[in-house]
Amino acid sequence: EAEAFLRSAEAICEMPYAWERYDLVCLPASFPYGGMENANLTFVTPTLLTGDKSLATVVAHEIAHSWTGNLVTAKTWAHFWLNEGWTRWLERQIKADVSGDRGYVDFDVARGREELEALCRSGYEHTSLVPDLSGGIDPDDAFSIVPYEKGSNLLHYLESLAGSRAFLGFFRRYLRAFSNDPLTSDQFRHFFAADFPHLAAQVDWDAWFHAAGPPPALAPLDSALDDRLATALSRCLSLDLAAFAALSPPDLKIALLDRLLRAEPAPDLLAALDDAFRLSVSPNAELRFRFAKLLLAAGLDKGVFVATDMATKVGRMKFVRPLYKALLRADIPKARNAALLTFQAHQHFYHPICRKMLAADLGLLPPPGDPPRRALFSLALGAALLFVGASLALRASRSV
Image (cartoon, rainbow, N blue to C red; front, side):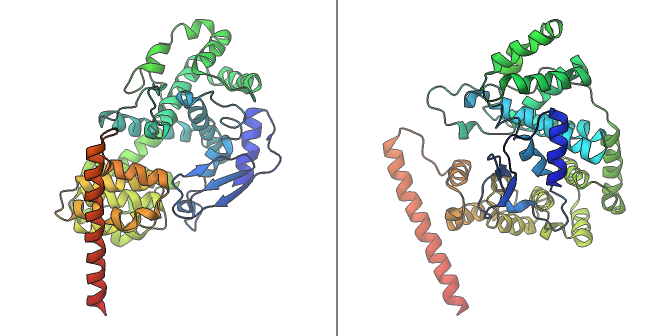
């Protein structure tokens, strides 16, 4: 698929691939991201390897970065959405072009909106598109789906105002104008206004760039695939598992599990799904991750095993951070302790960025600039590690 994605991107951008050669390398399981768009050589996570190419479309995102992110890039981290928002927009065009299904674009935008709205409801702090990173804020601490989904929603909204053909022409001019010339959000706004002055006057740019929360305006979407998914959800809730089996492409199965999580399915449905499709051990990490969260949300002990097992084999933050958080929230007596002990025992498996984020999620980081508490924290952490070590030694002695 990589070759097809690359040729499609060249046609959409009306600009040849600029980096001579394109290769991919699959990194160890501890790699904390889905991919990293290095020019010439994309790094990818082994969680994309499913045996059936069902997650190969993630490569379309990294290939899109060859134009939006590498060739045209944001001037500072505060304008990171110019990399990721544009790349999500281009990724969707590539997938629709290669699959021949334009409905995929609207369906994927709708899924991204759902994730973004859930993040905004969660109380997460950094939901403005152009975050204030002054005062020494680490950009990693402000990393989330916001630049991806809020950024791409701005672009889809502008596209709905301008029309798809006119916006595609604007995108191509944008690439030519800013290739090898990093830009800011204000430069983007002025560039759009030069092409579409009357449309630009209708956009509340300040709200888009600086207001917290969900997007201030949304492009209308075709709901055909969404309606199909709603029908499949209703059938699944009635234990009609054929509805799940019939969903294609794989993204629809992933989306159905997201919908099931909000529907709070009965344990017997989860057991039936696992028996029929072996979701708890699926080679598709997206499916296994969501099924682990479903089990935990249902209060099932099996969820603790599935979640901790995945969290010790995968270092991709998209999966491990929500899994640990789900363990902390689960109404299962042993879940919280399992999360803490699993992290203490396996923390050195994770990439340092992931390890730092997980420690913060688990409440294991002291407040910054508080030396006495840092000292207490160090003592507590040392005691916890001794306890874990003693527990593991005791288990080992018992098994001999």
